[in-house]
Amino acid sequence: MSKTVFTKTFGCQMNERDSEIMEQLLAQAGYIPVAEQSGADLVILNTCSIRAKAEQKVFSLLGMLRKQKKEQPGLRIVVAGCVAQQEGQQIFKRMPHVDIVVGTQQIYQLPDMLLRLEQGETKREISCDMEKSFSIPPFQKLLSPSPALTEFRKFVTIMQGCNNFCTYCVVPSTRGREISRPVADILEEVTLLTQQGVKEITLLGQNVNSYGCTNPVAEQKTGFADLLRLTAKMSGVDRLRFTTSNPQDLSSGLMQCFKDIPNLCPHFHLPVQAGSNSVLKKMHRKYTRELYLEKVDQLRSFCPEIAISTDVIVGFPGESEEDFQQTMEILETVRFHGSFSFKYSDRPNTRSADFADKVDEKVKGERLKRFQDRQDQISLERNREYIGTSVEVMVEKCKPGSIQARTRSNHIVHFPAPVETSVNLQLGDTTLVTINHAGKHSLNGVLTE
Image 1 (cartoon, rainbow, N blue to C red):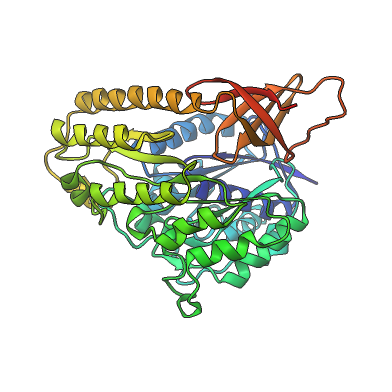
Image 2 (tube, rainbow, N blue to C red):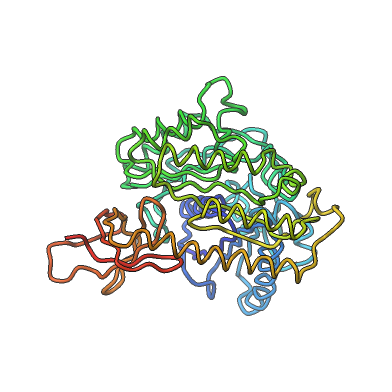
């Protein structure tokens, strides 16, 4: 008899991919994904601990699930991801109604862990060991159908972990050290995906720029730019994307790819984090504001139309008003198409948690508002540059009378669904849209005649 699973994902695209893998693995055990938490037989919280707010949301939702489990005793609750890796057994002590805690590198064990619970072998299950090699189950098992997923685009993990040890970041302790996945395995997975009709591939890693520099593939001498070129040549890859990059490792060879590879989308997410050299040094970011700006100029010389987005942390310990103004100067100079910006928060097992000179919460909030308000203005100005142009979009949502799509530069576009024409757009289809309106976060248009 089939059971239902509800998955709540917190955080980054790496977590989205992990949630997808868990749902695909559970499909083999008869679980069907559902969109509502209420009434589900299994609830998975795939957690993020990059910021304190995300972690707080997890424990708040776990508190709500306590009541649901009282009303539904057969409910199984799983905590996966970075909070699971970070807290381990402490989650059981704090939330005794949780059944399974599974770390970032042990999600492939989830079906077996559930089976042992169902057979009464154990009362609880925990697995948070860090692997020393990058291995996954056979692709065919991972690629089983999952009706809750959008099948025209997929994430493909190319590496895991990080060796940079930024002073504010939990990734090295929650996802381990950098390990690159063999090229042949990546290309095999891409082949299987495109054979199933996937048209857009996003290559994933904590720092894709350093792909191939770490075991077990160091002997292959295949860098990230090489991998991009190999993937782009594969039949069926209409669009190719990647995330995330560290400016210190951004090579001219990778930038050249944006000029040479037609199906590589002209969008680059390049986290700057701060505009002050003194703050960057305390963050252990290993680049300067000058180097960052130089990289941006180089990117635009290879691909003038490239859309650049970024990450910014406001209120890092010791950040002065002058330091913050230098971050604002970076915003004015680069004029990012968009950004993800957050107030700094102490995270467990990070060096910055022990730093003195913490910035007052009120000051952090005020600075964040100033940054986000100016970013919104710049995003609107940037988006208005597209008015009157015809852009290629890929359909990602179809509603009665309206369609949502995405440009190669990663802009969301809304336009009316065609009426009484031969055009019948489906998810994953590409078409041309003429932009006639711009907002801060999306564009509007009509089908190009």
